[in-house]
Picture 1 (tube, protein in one colour):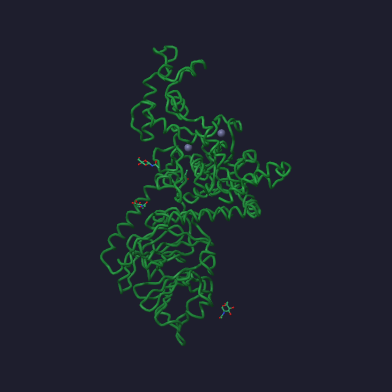
Picture 2 (cartoon, protein in one colour; picture 1 turned 90 degrees about the horizontal axis):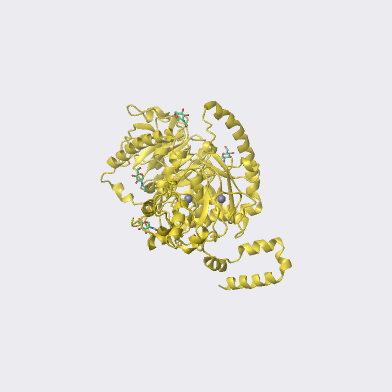
Length: 640
Ligand SMILES: *[C@@H]1O[C@H](CO)[C@@H](O)[C@H](O)[C@H]1NC(C)=O
Ligand SMILES: *[C@@H]1O[C@H](CO)[C@@H](O)[C@H](O)[C@H]1NC(C)=O
Ligand SMILES: *[C@@H]1O[C@H](CO)[C@@H](O)[C@H](O)[C@H]1NC(C)=O
Ligand SMILES: *[C@@H]1O[C@H](CO)[C@@H](O)[C@H](O)[C@H]1NC(C)=O
Ligand SMILES: [Zn+2]
Ligand SMILES: [Zn+2]
């Protein structure tokens, strides 16, 4: 409160010292002040309430419900009459067969009521007027969504087959077992945590914008994008895939045009909110959005602008506070009504991030839906305090039908078990790629919102480009190791950081016994697997697998008979392809009680594996596409 009062007082001072207001700092001061007084003022200015049947008819016409043409009367009549029905021609007019009659309008009202789940009375009742008075997106409700390509449909069919197999098998394996006690449901990342993570991203982004670091990096990446586009355009013409569609490319550029800044918040705040909105789509489709402040404006894919009333030669005029918030063109531009009270990181006013995510949905080819929990619901719904909004399952599936799903190779993948302070176990699947990682929430078929995060500082002391992970878990030992190059790290799960005195050399601690002629564990492994069945570590490198007996400690304990050929040790099941050399990751999934082997975009499952078996028999089935089991692991990073 004290701060608000102070800000108010300072505002007065500022108004008195008009010469000061001319300073650049004056502008940012104005933009960052408390605007709630403005909101109160604007509410009294809302001329977009639907009060009469005539308003309702105009609304139905504007948003695509009317299949007929409204007869325009002289102005005087419009003001004199409140009742729509009196406005209508009394008898059908043979000269204007498409003119609206009562039946056609009632039908349109009914259709509107159906869309917004109101009683379908065909009468403009209070509930209908209330709904029509809500602020909303300016795009019409009868817009059709972009049709998925034939290929995407085929991919979806293949998808359900392989999923079915994996799940059936997992279900069969989940019989009564001691392990069941470990199968404690995972906890979903809480809303508060997600909000925090998004805010952290925004804060970091703001700092980078202000220091100029972001623009510097973006400039370098954009040089490469433009080069890429020049070559790709040539190549796609050869493949006959250049449909002139801007989104045939994985990289899409956007700009908040400098004639279209909002007057309500700093430019960097606007850019940050828009950047975050684009990132939310990048989290679910293999499209990276890059802010482009340097290319000629007509080379930028999506141009965004705030405007009031008549704006930017746009045919769709804004209507002041309330009513229409924004509109967008498919594979085109986004306009935002600056007469709205836009805010970021606040429950007051209209959340700019939420509106932007919706409009980007249109740009990507999505249309309005009557599901009120979808981001593509046309009516703006206020954010619930402390909750966050996200792209729901259907939103994701729809946009993926158009752009496909993300796929890619990982450095290492593993389930990590953590005992929480309240004694509960949680485990999720962690997927590392280069300097980032995702946490996959198996129960929800998706990664945690806001992923990927950078490995450092989230995993203190750990490096990028990890080769392998192993959780040694026996009666006597409970240790987490990471391997990379010639080194390995022991990780302190309790304190979430690497133990002191690490990394150490692999050659120091994973040696062959003195005098033995079996080789030591080599450097630069491909990956490593702790096999619960015999409590040993298996290191994969090239076409070989090396066994290491953990129970004997670091004093020389390479398993006899090893190394062996991967394809002999892990033979394919009938009809399967043999495992490739150089696997990316081999891991045990607590969720599926299964052993997976990953390589590039594919995975194999060890059908003979059960963690309670003592006999090590292996039989691998596969490959299956990764993206059909683990959804939406997208690299949102726009740095190239
Ligand atoms: C569809 O799939 C076929 C075969 O996989 C491929 O040759 C073709 O280029 C794809 N078309 C599009 C538009 O992606
Ligand atoms: C969404 O619609 C359902 C019924 O269709 C209703 O129960 C719920 O309150 C609505 N949610 C919001 C936020 O309007
Ligand atoms: C996860 O995927 C499975 C299979 O496609 C589906 O049955 C289930 O409803 C999904 N769960 C969630 C939370 O989306
Ligand atoms: C670890 O390995 C590196 C590179 O092979 C070597 O230079 C270093 O001396 C080794 N350190 C120890 C303690 O053996
Ligand atoms: Zn819309
Ligand atoms: Zn416009």
